[in-house]
Amino acid sequence: AKSQGKNDYRMFSPEMYINSSEELLLENDLREAIKKEELLLHYQPQVDAFSGEIAGFEALIRWNHPVHGLLSPDKFIPLAEKTGLILPIGQWVIHTACRQHSSWMKAGLAPLKISVNLSAHQFLKQDFTKNVEEIMSTYSMNPAYLEFEITESMAMDFSYALKVLEELKSLGVQISMDDFGTGYSSLLYLKQLNIDTLKIDKYFVDDLLEGTYGSVLVSTIIAMADAMQLKVVAEGVETKAQLQELQSLGCQLIQGYYFSKAVPADYITENFNTLKT
Ligand code: C2E
Ligand code: CA
Ligand code: CA
Ligand code: CA
Image 1 (spheres, helix red, strand yellow):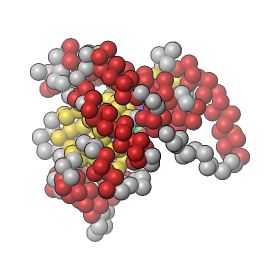
Image 2 (cartoon, protein in one colour):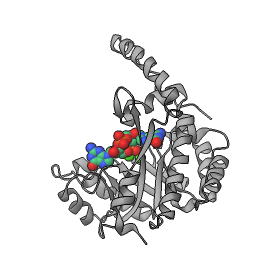
Image 3 (cartoon, protein in one colour):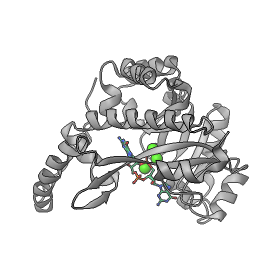
């Protein structure tokens, strides 16, 4: 498999020199973070745009750093990817999300889908599917409730991506294409990859109500998804006006601050009573 060259072509600058010594400190901390139980997942609901019912949750990682406080993934996931720490961290994420899912089931919550973000390194690692299969059996989890969010760049080595996705699909997990429209992509590829869901990036949702053509891209993506029988999730929905526009365009699922930001697992267990079966 090809490696992701994303960080390999950056120019070196004085600011980065300063950053890199800070980075070194952070890297050392990050090495210890799993053991010290400083990582945690928050969960953001994905909601049916018409009924308001929760369809699932996206697991989003945070790092409760002893000095810097609660760090968002943008502060440490790129570093984790650069250093290879993303592999043990990614493992931890899948385990934690699945353990949470099984504990919600035991607490009597309706069986909802849980979405986990994958990094290219995980996706391209040998035996990834086998590894996922083992995790499913550890938590007696039905794979149909697990969804992996991948990005367009992971399909750069197309034939390899195709192979992994076929394996994952035959295991029964679902696949969604994250940040759709922001990467380089071809609709032809998308069709062959046999994914279940397209996530429309916040970037396009932000433009929805701007100017004459603001909704053109979103409506095009939705029409295309319909034609290909894919589900669509609009990300970063913050206002009622955006929700209404998305409803009128026929977007089935929404995710965003308008409904809820990502919240701790306990918050869901305690407050989402409607999920109790
Ligand atoms: P993403 O997968 O595109 O996740 C959506 C991001 O948008 C999340 O940020 C979420 O909190 C934020 N968001 C959701 N709704 C709204 C909204 O209405 N308004 C605004 N302004 N933001 C909204 P977060 O949690 O900071 O995650 C950032 C990125 O970090 C994620 O983007 C994903 O690429 C990455 N990430 C998060 N968790 C993991 C993980 O477990 N593994 C890997 N590899 N990457 C992760
Ligand atoms: Ca995502
Ligand atoms: Ca996204
Ligand atoms: Ca994003």
